[in-house]
Length: 217
Picture 1 (cartoon, rainbow, N blue to C red):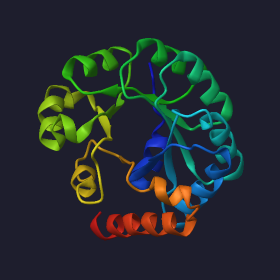
Picture 2 (picture 1 turned 30 degrees about the vertical axis):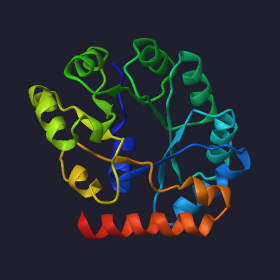
Picture 3 (picture 1 turned 180 degrees about the horizontal axis):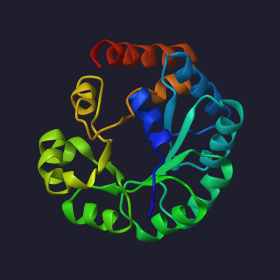
Protein backbone atom coordinates (compact mmCIF):
# COMPACT_ATOMS: atom_id res chain seq x y z
CA UNK A 1 0.00 0.00 0.00
CA UNK A 2 1.23 3.48 -0.88
CA UNK A 3 1.37 5.12 2.52
CA UNK A 4 1.92 8.80 3.15
CA UNK A 5 3.51 9.06 6.60
CA UNK A 6 1.35 10.76 9.22
CA UNK A 7 4.37 12.76 10.33
CA UNK A 8 4.66 14.27 6.84
CA UNK A 9 0.94 15.00 6.69
CA UNK A 10 1.10 16.69 10.11
CA UNK A 11 3.92 18.90 8.86
CA UNK A 12 1.84 19.81 5.81
CA UNK A 13 -1.11 20.60 8.08
CA UNK A 14 1.06 22.80 10.27
CA UNK A 15 2.32 24.74 7.25
CA UNK A 16 -1.08 24.86 5.54
CA UNK A 17 0.50 25.82 2.24
CA UNK A 18 3.23 24.19 0.18
CA UNK A 19 4.73 26.89 -2.02
CA UNK A 20 4.92 25.63 -5.60
CA UNK A 21 7.54 26.92 -7.99
CA UNK A 22 9.97 26.02 -10.79
CA UNK A 23 13.66 26.88 -10.89
CA UNK A 24 15.38 27.98 -14.07
CA UNK A 25 18.80 28.57 -12.50
CA UNK A 26 20.14 26.17 -9.86
CA UNK A 27 21.74 29.03 -7.93
CA UNK A 28 18.27 30.46 -7.24
CA UNK A 29 17.01 27.35 -5.46
CA UNK A 30 18.46 27.88 -2.00
CA UNK A 31 17.72 31.64 -1.83
CA UNK A 32 14.07 30.95 -2.75
CA UNK A 33 13.74 28.24 -0.11
CA UNK A 34 15.40 30.39 2.55
CA UNK A 35 13.21 33.36 1.63
CA UNK A 36 10.07 31.26 2.05
CA UNK A 37 11.31 29.90 5.35
CA UNK A 38 12.03 33.41 6.58
CA UNK A 39 8.43 34.32 5.76
CA UNK A 40 7.02 31.40 7.71
CA UNK A 41 6.39 28.82 4.99
CA UNK A 42 8.32 25.61 5.59
CA UNK A 43 6.88 23.34 2.89
CA UNK A 44 7.42 23.49 -0.86
CA UNK A 45 6.50 21.72 -4.07
CA UNK A 46 9.43 22.14 -6.44
CA UNK A 47 8.15 21.31 -9.90
CA UNK A 48 10.22 18.93 -12.02
CA UNK A 49 9.75 20.87 -15.24
CA UNK A 50 13.12 22.45 -15.96
CA UNK A 51 16.64 21.18 -16.70
CA UNK A 52 17.72 22.79 -13.42
CA UNK A 53 15.14 20.97 -11.30
CA UNK A 54 17.29 18.08 -10.08
CA UNK A 55 20.25 20.28 -9.15
CA UNK A 56 17.86 22.69 -7.44
CA UNK A 57 16.35 19.84 -5.46
CA UNK A 58 19.73 18.57 -4.33
CA UNK A 59 20.78 22.07 -3.26
CA UNK A 60 17.65 22.69 -1.20
CA UNK A 61 17.80 19.30 0.51
CA UNK A 62 21.46 19.83 1.38
CA UNK A 63 21.30 23.46 2.47
CA UNK A 64 17.80 24.11 3.86
CA UNK A 65 17.21 21.19 6.26
CA UNK A 66 14.22 22.84 7.96
CA UNK A 67 12.23 22.82 4.73
CA UNK A 68 9.73 20.04 4.00
CA UNK A 69 10.69 19.34 0.40
CA UNK A 70 8.07 18.04 -1.99
CA UNK A 71 8.56 17.58 -5.72
CA UNK A 72 5.81 18.06 -8.27
CA UNK A 73 5.23 17.04 -11.89
CA UNK A 74 6.80 13.62 -11.39
CA UNK A 75 5.83 11.86 -14.61
CA UNK A 76 8.15 8.84 -14.93
CA UNK A 77 9.58 6.06 -12.75
CA UNK A 78 13.07 7.36 -13.53
CA UNK A 79 12.18 10.74 -12.06
CA UNK A 80 10.92 9.00 -8.93
CA UNK A 81 14.33 7.40 -8.45
CA UNK A 82 16.15 10.72 -8.96
CA UNK A 83 13.84 12.55 -6.57
CA UNK A 84 14.22 9.94 -3.85
CA UNK A 85 18.01 9.80 -4.22
CA UNK A 86 18.22 13.60 -3.97
CA UNK A 87 16.51 13.55 -0.58
CA UNK A 88 12.96 14.77 -1.23
CA UNK A 89 10.38 14.22 1.53
CA UNK A 90 7.49 13.49 -0.83
CA UNK A 91 6.34 13.67 -4.42
CA UNK A 92 3.16 14.56 -6.29
CA UNK A 93 1.98 14.44 -9.87
CA UNK A 94 -0.74 16.10 -11.95
CA UNK A 95 -2.15 12.72 -13.03
CA UNK A 96 -2.73 9.12 -12.03
CA UNK A 97 0.09 6.99 -13.52
CA UNK A 98 0.23 3.46 -12.04
CA UNK A 99 3.87 3.00 -13.06
CA UNK A 100 4.89 6.12 -11.14
CA UNK A 101 2.94 5.00 -8.06
CA UNK A 102 4.60 1.59 -8.18
CA UNK A 103 8.04 3.13 -8.58
CA UNK A 104 7.42 5.43 -5.61
CA UNK A 105 6.32 2.52 -3.46
CA UNK A 106 9.38 0.52 -4.50
CA UNK A 107 11.87 3.20 -3.43
CA UNK A 108 9.88 4.40 -0.43
CA UNK A 109 8.94 7.87 -1.66
CA UNK A 110 5.68 9.16 -0.16
CA UNK A 111 3.62 10.01 -3.22
CA UNK A 112 0.28 11.63 -4.01
CA UNK A 113 -1.00 11.09 -7.57
CA UNK A 114 -3.20 13.67 -9.23
CA UNK A 115 -6.93 13.05 -9.61
CA UNK A 116 -9.82 15.06 -11.01
CA UNK A 117 -12.62 12.49 -11.40
CA UNK A 118 -14.19 9.63 -9.42
CA UNK A 119 -12.65 7.08 -11.80
CA UNK A 120 -9.17 8.51 -11.26
CA UNK A 121 -9.74 8.57 -7.51
CA UNK A 122 -10.84 4.92 -7.54
CA UNK A 123 -7.71 4.01 -9.50
CA UNK A 124 -5.57 5.77 -6.87
CA UNK A 125 -7.45 4.02 -4.08
CA UNK A 126 -6.86 0.68 -5.80
CA UNK A 127 -3.12 1.32 -5.50
CA UNK A 128 -3.46 2.13 -1.81
CA UNK A 129 -3.23 5.92 -2.03
CA UNK A 130 -5.02 7.82 0.72
CA UNK A 131 -3.59 11.29 0.00
CA UNK A 132 -4.16 12.57 -3.54
CA UNK A 133 -3.54 15.80 -5.38
CA UNK A 134 -6.79 17.41 -6.54
CA UNK A 135 -5.83 19.11 -9.80
CA UNK A 136 -6.79 21.44 -11.41
CA UNK A 137 -8.86 22.39 -8.37
CA UNK A 138 -10.67 25.57 -9.35
CA UNK A 139 -11.04 24.66 -13.03
CA UNK A 140 -12.83 21.46 -12.00
CA UNK A 141 -15.30 23.34 -9.84
CA UNK A 142 -13.42 23.96 -6.61
CA UNK A 143 -14.81 22.95 -3.25
CA UNK A 144 -18.35 22.40 -4.52
CA UNK A 145 -17.10 19.80 -6.98
CA UNK A 146 -14.67 18.22 -4.52
CA UNK A 147 -17.36 17.74 -1.87
CA UNK A 148 -19.68 16.05 -4.37
CA UNK A 149 -16.98 13.98 -6.02
CA UNK A 150 -15.46 12.85 -2.74
CA UNK A 151 -18.68 12.09 -0.87
CA UNK A 152 -18.92 8.38 -1.83
CA UNK A 153 -15.35 7.81 -0.62
CA UNK A 154 -15.51 9.77 2.63
CA UNK A 155 -15.61 6.62 4.77
CA UNK A 156 -12.19 5.63 3.35
CA UNK A 157 -10.46 8.64 4.92
CA UNK A 158 -9.16 10.06 1.65
CA UNK A 159 -7.34 13.37 2.01
CA UNK A 160 -6.78 15.92 -0.72
CA UNK A 161 -4.00 18.34 -1.65
CA UNK A 162 -5.67 20.92 -3.94
CA UNK A 163 -3.66 22.87 -6.47
CA UNK A 164 -4.63 24.95 -9.49
CA UNK A 165 -6.40 28.24 -9.00
CA UNK A 166 -5.92 28.20 -5.22
CA UNK A 167 -4.88 31.62 -3.93
CA UNK A 168 -4.77 33.82 -0.85
CA UNK A 169 -8.48 34.63 -1.25
CA UNK A 170 -9.81 31.06 -1.27
CA UNK A 171 -7.13 29.04 0.55
CA UNK A 172 -8.76 29.35 3.97
CA UNK A 173 -12.04 27.95 2.63
CA UNK A 174 -10.15 24.94 1.31
CA UNK A 175 -8.20 24.47 4.54
CA UNK A 176 -11.39 24.57 6.61
CA UNK A 177 -12.34 21.26 5.01
CA UNK A 178 -11.36 18.44 7.41
CA UNK A 179 -10.01 16.27 4.58
CA UNK A 180 -7.61 18.93 3.24
CA UNK A 181 -4.33 19.12 5.19
CA UNK A 182 -2.69 21.69 2.90
CA UNK A 183 -3.00 23.48 -0.43
CA UNK A 184 -0.51 24.19 -3.17
CA UNK A 185 0.55 27.83 -3.26
CA UNK A 186 1.82 28.56 -6.75
CA UNK A 187 1.06 32.30 -6.44
CA UNK A 188 3.61 32.99 -3.70
CA UNK A 189 6.90 32.77 -5.61
CA UNK A 190 6.45 35.26 -8.45
CA UNK A 191 8.67 34.65 -11.45
CA UNK A 192 9.47 38.36 -11.70
CA UNK A 193 10.81 38.43 -8.15
CA UNK A 194 13.04 35.44 -8.84
CA UNK A 195 14.39 37.02 -12.02
CA UNK A 196 15.24 40.17 -10.06
CA UNK A 197 16.63 38.06 -7.21
CA UNK A 198 14.31 39.93 -4.88
CA UNK A 199 14.42 37.42 -2.05
CA UNK A 200 13.04 39.95 0.42
CA UNK A 201 10.01 40.33 -1.83
CA UNK A 202 9.37 36.59 -1.71
CA UNK A 203 9.76 36.62 2.07
CA UNK A 204 7.19 39.41 2.27
CA UNK A 205 4.70 37.48 0.14
CA UNK A 206 5.23 34.36 2.26
CA UNK A 207 4.74 36.39 5.44
CA UNK A 208 1.44 37.75 4.11
CA UNK A 209 0.20 34.22 3.53
CA UNK A 210 1.41 33.12 6.96
CA UNK A 211 -0.41 36.01 8.60
CA UNK A 212 -3.68 35.14 6.86
CA UNK A 213 -3.39 31.53 7.95
CA UNK A 214 -2.46 32.36 11.53
CA UNK A 215 -5.39 34.77 11.86
CA UNK A 216 -7.93 32.50 10.17
CA UNK A 217 -7.15 28.96 11.24
